[in-house]
Amino acid sequence: MKNPNRTKLLSLLAFFLLSAISFAQTKAQNSPFEKYKKSTTSEFEFRKLQFQVEAMRASLPPNTPLPKGVGVPFVYGETSDGKLVIEVEVWGSDLPKDVDARKESMYQAIVVSTAAFSFAFHPALEETFKKWTVIQFSDSERFQKAHGKVVDPYIGNYENGELVLR
Image (cartoon, rainbow, N blue to C red; front, side):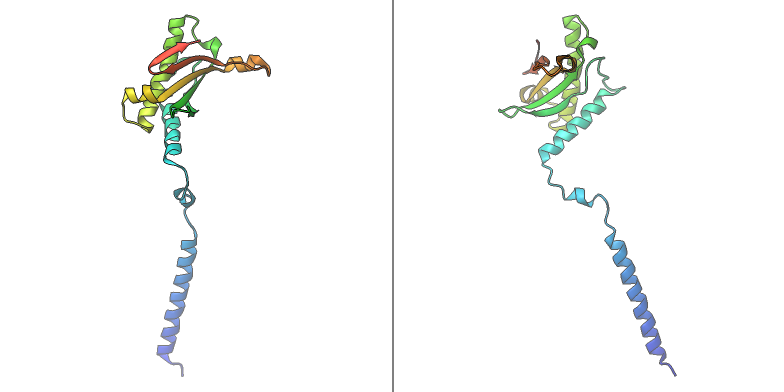
């Protein structure tokens, strides 16, 4: 005759063993996002990416749609004295021919850059933006027409609150 306590004990042991195996299999399936939580990205790199995202968002309607011929600002690098270099690609033939109208089109990209900078780096201090950023406007059309020749693509520069066209 079988021992009823032993049968109960074996059944209970089998249950716990199956539960442990099931739990181990469930536990082994990590979230696909775990690897990102251990990222080595610096705070600065993260904030530069935040700038990129906010510049894209701010450039789309209904926010501040950029004029024809003006691209979305993006972080290009840093100057030797620590200023953030923001690049805006433009298409020269699509920009207004009148100098004041051209400047106004380019100022729209500066407004987007200011909003993105405020979102990513510093809350709404225009003076900080003016002091610590340089915006370069490069004409992509000049690259295309150069056919491998060296060309200076920059048609404008914004620094210390002043936009200068070349």
